[in-house]
Length: 294
Ligand code: PLP
Image (tube, helix red, strand yellow):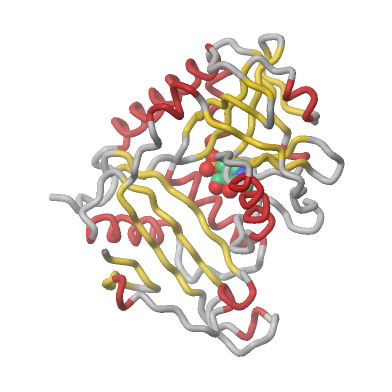
Protein backbone atom coordinates (compact mmCIF):
# COMPACT_ATOMS: atom_id res chain seq x y z
CA UNK A 1 0.00 0.00 0.00
CA UNK A 2 1.19 3.49 -0.87
CA UNK A 3 0.42 6.72 0.93
CA UNK A 4 0.79 10.29 -0.24
CA UNK A 5 2.71 12.10 2.49
CA UNK A 6 3.37 15.85 2.15
CA UNK A 7 4.76 15.97 -1.37
CA UNK A 8 5.13 12.41 -2.61
CA UNK A 9 3.86 8.86 -2.65
CA UNK A 10 5.71 6.57 -0.24
CA UNK A 11 5.23 2.94 0.87
CA UNK A 12 2.96 2.81 3.94
CA UNK A 13 5.90 1.53 6.03
CA UNK A 14 7.62 4.90 5.41
CA UNK A 15 4.51 7.03 5.93
CA UNK A 16 5.39 8.30 9.42
CA UNK A 17 4.26 11.46 11.17
CA UNK A 18 6.03 13.18 14.06
CA UNK A 19 4.85 12.76 17.67
CA UNK A 20 5.06 16.56 17.73
CA UNK A 21 2.43 16.82 15.02
CA UNK A 22 -0.33 19.10 16.29
CA UNK A 23 -2.89 16.83 14.64
CA UNK A 24 -1.74 14.13 17.06
CA UNK A 25 -1.20 16.41 20.06
CA UNK A 26 -4.33 18.54 19.76
CA UNK A 27 -6.56 17.22 16.97
CA UNK A 28 -5.57 20.45 15.22
CA UNK A 29 -6.36 19.72 11.61
CA UNK A 30 -9.03 18.82 9.12
CA UNK A 31 -10.06 15.96 6.87
CA UNK A 32 -12.26 15.03 3.98
CA UNK A 33 -13.64 11.74 2.69
CA UNK A 34 -13.95 11.10 -1.03
CA UNK A 35 -15.48 8.29 -3.02
CA UNK A 36 -13.96 7.27 -6.34
CA UNK A 37 -16.15 5.46 -8.87
CA UNK A 38 -14.50 3.98 -11.93
CA UNK A 39 -11.50 6.29 -11.61
CA UNK A 40 -13.58 9.46 -11.14
CA UNK A 41 -13.61 11.35 -7.84
CA UNK A 42 -17.33 11.93 -7.22
CA UNK A 43 -18.16 15.61 -6.63
CA UNK A 44 -14.44 16.31 -6.47
CA UNK A 45 -14.74 20.09 -6.58
CA UNK A 46 -17.45 20.16 -3.90
CA UNK A 47 -15.35 17.99 -1.56
CA UNK A 48 -12.12 19.86 -2.20
CA UNK A 49 -13.81 23.24 -1.81
CA UNK A 50 -15.16 21.99 1.51
CA UNK A 51 -11.64 20.90 2.52
CA UNK A 52 -10.38 24.40 1.77
CA UNK A 53 -13.37 25.89 3.61
CA UNK A 54 -12.47 23.77 6.67
CA UNK A 55 -8.87 24.99 6.36
CA UNK A 56 -9.97 28.63 6.12
CA UNK A 57 -12.23 28.23 9.17
CA UNK A 58 -9.26 27.16 11.31
CA UNK A 59 -6.80 29.58 9.68
CA UNK A 60 -4.74 26.75 8.18
CA UNK A 61 -2.60 27.58 5.17
CA UNK A 62 -2.85 24.50 2.95
CA UNK A 63 0.40 25.36 1.08
CA UNK A 64 -1.23 23.91 -2.10
CA UNK A 65 -4.27 24.58 -4.23
CA UNK A 66 -7.28 22.48 -5.20
CA UNK A 67 -5.65 21.15 -8.36
CA UNK A 68 -2.54 20.14 -6.39
CA UNK A 69 -4.70 18.20 -3.93
CA UNK A 70 -6.63 16.56 -6.78
CA UNK A 71 -3.39 15.51 -8.45
CA UNK A 72 -2.13 14.03 -5.16
CA UNK A 73 -5.34 11.98 -4.92
CA UNK A 74 -4.96 10.70 -8.48
CA UNK A 75 -1.29 9.84 -7.88
CA UNK A 76 -2.25 7.89 -4.76
CA UNK A 77 -4.96 6.01 -6.64
CA UNK A 78 -2.55 5.18 -9.43
CA UNK A 79 0.18 4.01 -7.04
CA UNK A 80 -2.32 1.61 -5.48
CA UNK A 81 -3.97 0.62 -8.80
CA UNK A 82 -7.37 1.66 -7.50
CA UNK A 83 -10.37 2.77 -9.53
CA UNK A 84 -13.16 2.14 -6.99
CA UNK A 85 -11.92 3.62 -3.80
CA UNK A 86 -12.49 5.35 -0.54
CA UNK A 87 -10.06 8.22 0.00
CA UNK A 88 -9.25 9.93 3.26
CA UNK A 89 -7.51 13.29 3.02
CA UNK A 90 -5.97 14.51 6.26
CA UNK A 91 -4.30 17.86 6.78
CA UNK A 92 -2.91 18.73 10.18
CA UNK A 93 -1.37 21.95 11.41
CA UNK A 94 2.00 20.21 11.08
CA UNK A 95 4.72 19.56 13.64
CA UNK A 96 6.10 22.05 16.09
CA UNK A 97 6.94 22.52 19.76
CA UNK A 98 4.26 21.73 22.35
CA UNK A 99 1.82 24.62 22.69
CA UNK A 100 -1.48 25.62 21.17
CA UNK A 101 -0.18 28.50 19.08
CA UNK A 102 -0.70 27.48 15.43
CA UNK A 103 2.32 29.59 14.45
CA UNK A 104 4.53 27.00 16.18
CA UNK A 105 3.97 24.82 13.09
CA UNK A 106 5.60 25.97 9.89
CA UNK A 107 4.08 23.55 7.38
CA UNK A 108 0.91 21.47 7.38
CA UNK A 109 1.16 17.69 7.30
CA UNK A 110 -0.72 16.45 4.24
CA UNK A 111 -1.76 12.81 3.90
CA UNK A 112 -3.80 10.92 1.31
CA UNK A 113 -4.88 7.37 2.12
CA UNK A 114 -6.74 5.40 -0.55
CA UNK A 115 -8.33 2.03 0.03
CA UNK A 116 -10.34 -0.25 -2.24
CA UNK A 117 -14.01 0.49 -1.63
CA UNK A 118 -15.72 -2.38 0.10
CA UNK A 119 -19.46 -2.35 -0.54
CA UNK A 120 -21.74 -2.33 2.48
CA UNK A 121 -23.67 -5.61 2.78
CA UNK A 122 -26.60 -5.66 0.34
CA UNK A 123 -28.91 -6.51 3.26
CA UNK A 124 -28.25 -3.06 4.72
CA UNK A 125 -29.96 -1.54 1.68
CA UNK A 126 -32.74 -4.10 1.33
CA UNK A 127 -33.59 -4.38 5.04
CA UNK A 128 -32.24 -1.20 6.60
CA UNK A 129 -29.85 -0.59 9.47
CA UNK A 130 -30.32 0.08 13.16
CA UNK A 131 -29.84 3.49 14.76
CA UNK A 132 -29.97 4.80 18.29
CA UNK A 133 -30.53 8.27 19.62
CA UNK A 134 -27.34 8.92 21.57
CA UNK A 135 -27.25 10.44 25.03
CA UNK A 136 -24.15 12.32 23.85
CA UNK A 137 -25.26 15.68 22.46
CA UNK A 138 -23.79 17.24 19.33
CA UNK A 139 -21.16 19.87 20.12
CA UNK A 140 -22.67 23.31 20.39
CA UNK A 141 -22.26 24.91 16.96
CA UNK A 142 -21.19 28.15 18.63
CA UNK A 143 -18.38 26.21 20.34
CA UNK A 144 -17.14 24.18 17.37
CA UNK A 145 -18.50 25.02 13.94
CA UNK A 146 -19.76 21.72 12.47
CA UNK A 147 -18.78 22.96 8.97
CA UNK A 148 -15.18 22.35 10.04
CA UNK A 149 -14.46 18.69 9.27
CA UNK A 150 -12.10 18.61 12.18
CA UNK A 151 -9.65 15.93 13.33
CA UNK A 152 -11.15 16.58 16.74
CA UNK A 153 -13.73 13.80 16.49
CA UNK A 154 -14.28 12.78 20.11
CA UNK A 155 -17.84 14.11 20.21
CA UNK A 156 -18.76 11.70 17.41
CA UNK A 157 -16.63 8.86 18.81
CA UNK A 158 -18.45 9.04 22.17
CA UNK A 159 -21.77 8.71 20.33
CA UNK A 160 -20.34 5.86 18.22
CA UNK A 161 -19.35 4.01 21.42
CA UNK A 162 -22.98 4.25 22.52
CA UNK A 163 -24.12 2.85 19.16
CA UNK A 164 -21.70 -0.06 19.43
CA UNK A 165 -22.89 -0.88 22.96
CA UNK A 166 -26.46 -0.99 21.63
CA UNK A 167 -25.40 -3.10 18.63
CA UNK A 168 -26.51 -0.31 16.29
CA UNK A 169 -24.80 0.90 13.14
CA UNK A 170 -25.09 4.61 13.74
CA UNK A 171 -25.97 7.02 16.55
CA UNK A 172 -28.00 10.13 15.97
CA UNK A 173 -27.06 13.05 18.16
CA UNK A 174 -29.46 15.73 19.35
CA UNK A 175 -28.29 19.32 19.63
CA UNK A 176 -28.19 21.21 22.93
CA UNK A 177 -31.82 22.31 22.42
CA UNK A 178 -32.90 18.67 22.10
CA UNK A 179 -33.60 18.76 18.36
CA UNK A 180 -32.34 16.11 15.95
CA UNK A 181 -28.92 17.03 14.60
CA UNK A 182 -27.00 14.33 12.73
CA UNK A 183 -25.26 10.98 12.91
CA UNK A 184 -21.61 10.47 13.83
CA UNK A 185 -20.72 10.28 10.13
CA UNK A 186 -24.04 10.91 8.41
CA UNK A 187 -27.04 13.17 7.96
CA UNK A 188 -30.53 11.99 8.85
CA UNK A 189 -33.81 12.16 6.91
CA UNK A 190 -37.30 10.93 7.67
CA UNK A 191 -40.55 10.83 5.76
CA UNK A 192 -43.86 11.77 7.37
CA UNK A 193 -47.16 12.65 5.68
CA UNK A 194 -45.34 12.12 2.38
CA UNK A 195 -42.90 14.95 3.15
CA UNK A 196 -39.14 14.39 3.35
CA UNK A 197 -37.82 16.01 6.56
CA UNK A 198 -34.21 16.72 7.50
CA UNK A 199 -32.62 18.91 10.19
CA UNK A 200 -31.57 22.30 8.84
CA UNK A 201 -27.96 23.50 9.02
CA UNK A 202 -29.04 25.81 11.89
CA UNK A 203 -29.46 22.67 14.02
CA UNK A 204 -25.66 22.48 14.13
CA UNK A 205 -24.87 19.87 11.48
CA UNK A 206 -22.37 19.39 8.72
CA UNK A 207 -24.13 20.30 5.47
CA UNK A 208 -23.26 16.97 3.88
CA UNK A 209 -22.60 16.89 0.16
CA UNK A 210 -24.77 13.77 -0.13
CA UNK A 211 -27.49 15.51 1.89
CA UNK A 212 -27.57 18.43 -0.57
CA UNK A 213 -27.70 16.12 -3.56
CA UNK A 214 -30.48 14.02 -2.01
CA UNK A 215 -32.52 17.16 -1.25
CA UNK A 216 -32.09 18.24 -4.90
CA UNK A 217 -33.03 14.76 -6.13
CA UNK A 218 -36.12 14.68 -3.91
CA UNK A 219 -37.29 18.06 -5.22
CA UNK A 220 -36.57 17.03 -8.83
CA UNK A 221 -38.64 13.88 -8.23
CA UNK A 222 -41.60 15.98 -7.12
CA UNK A 223 -41.26 15.22 -3.39
CA UNK A 224 -41.80 17.94 -0.80
CA UNK A 225 -38.78 18.59 1.40
CA UNK A 226 -38.86 20.33 4.75
CA UNK A 227 -35.64 21.43 6.48
CA UNK A 228 -36.12 22.51 10.08
CA UNK A 229 -36.00 21.64 13.76
CA UNK A 230 -37.43 18.22 14.59
CA UNK A 231 -37.81 16.12 17.71
CA UNK A 232 -37.16 12.46 18.42
CA UNK A 233 -40.93 11.98 18.80
CA UNK A 234 -41.45 13.22 15.23
CA UNK A 235 -38.76 10.84 14.01
CA UNK A 236 -40.40 7.90 15.83
CA UNK A 237 -43.72 8.70 14.09
CA UNK A 238 -42.15 8.69 10.60
CA UNK A 239 -43.06 6.16 7.91
CA UNK A 240 -39.47 5.95 6.60
CA UNK A 241 -36.05 6.89 7.89
CA UNK A 242 -32.74 6.97 6.05
CA UNK A 243 -29.26 8.39 6.49
CA UNK A 244 -26.81 9.74 3.92
CA UNK A 245 -23.10 10.16 3.45
CA UNK A 246 -20.47 9.87 0.75
CA UNK A 247 -19.83 6.17 1.25
CA UNK A 248 -23.28 4.91 2.32
CA UNK A 249 -25.07 7.06 -0.27
CA UNK A 250 -28.73 6.64 0.82
CA UNK A 251 -28.97 4.04 3.57
CA UNK A 252 -32.43 2.95 4.76
CA UNK A 253 -33.11 2.52 8.48
CA UNK A 254 -35.07 -0.36 9.96
CA UNK A 255 -35.01 0.71 13.59
CA UNK A 256 -34.42 3.76 15.75
CA UNK A 257 -34.09 2.68 19.39
CA UNK A 258 -37.06 0.31 19.76
CA UNK A 259 -39.17 1.79 16.95
CA UNK A 260 -39.26 -0.22 13.72
CA UNK A 261 -39.49 1.09 10.14
CA UNK A 262 -39.98 -0.50 6.75
CA UNK A 263 -37.69 0.33 3.85
CA UNK A 264 -40.08 2.59 1.97
CA UNK A 265 -40.66 3.91 -1.50
CA UNK A 266 -39.00 7.28 -0.97
CA UNK A 267 -35.77 5.74 0.36
CA UNK A 268 -35.65 3.32 -2.54
CA UNK A 269 -36.41 6.00 -5.12
CA UNK A 270 -33.79 8.36 -3.68
CA UNK A 271 -31.12 5.67 -3.60
CA UNK A 272 -31.89 4.81 -7.22
CA UNK A 273 -31.79 8.48 -8.21
CA UNK A 274 -28.49 8.93 -6.36
CA UNK A 275 -26.96 6.03 -8.26
CA UNK A 276 -28.17 7.60 -11.51
CA UNK A 277 -26.51 10.88 -10.48
CA UNK A 278 -23.26 9.00 -9.84
CA UNK A 279 -23.41 7.23 -13.21
CA UNK A 280 -24.16 10.47 -15.05
CA UNK A 281 -21.33 12.26 -13.26
CA UNK A 282 -18.84 9.49 -13.95
CA UNK A 283 -19.79 9.41 -17.64
CA UNK A 284 -19.39 13.17 -17.90
CA UNK A 285 -16.08 13.40 -16.04
CA UNK A 286 -14.42 10.26 -17.31
CA UNK A 287 -11.19 11.24 -19.02
CA UNK A 288 -11.18 14.73 -17.44
CA UNK A 289 -8.68 13.75 -14.78
CA UNK A 290 -5.05 13.03 -15.61
CA UNK A 291 -4.85 9.88 -17.71
CA UNK A 292 -2.81 8.07 -15.10
CA UNK A 293 -4.13 4.61 -15.88
CA UNK A 294 -2.96 4.46 -19.50
N1 PLP B 1 -22.23 14.56 9.26
C1 PLP B 1 -21.04 14.20 9.77
C2 PLP B 1 -20.74 14.50 11.20
C3 PLP B 1 -20.09 13.57 8.95
O1 PLP B 1 -18.89 13.22 9.46
C4 PLP B 1 -20.43 13.29 7.61
C5 PLP B 1 -19.47 12.61 6.72
O2 PLP B 1 -18.36 12.37 7.05
C6 PLP B 1 -21.68 13.66 7.13
C7 PLP B 1 -22.55 14.30 7.98
C8 PLP B 1 -22.07 13.39 5.69
O3 PLP B 1 -21.35 14.22 4.81
P1 PLP B 1 -21.12 13.84 3.27
O4 PLP B 1 -22.46 13.56 2.70
O5 PLP B 1 -20.52 15.07 2.69
O6 PLP B 1 -20.23 12.64 3.24
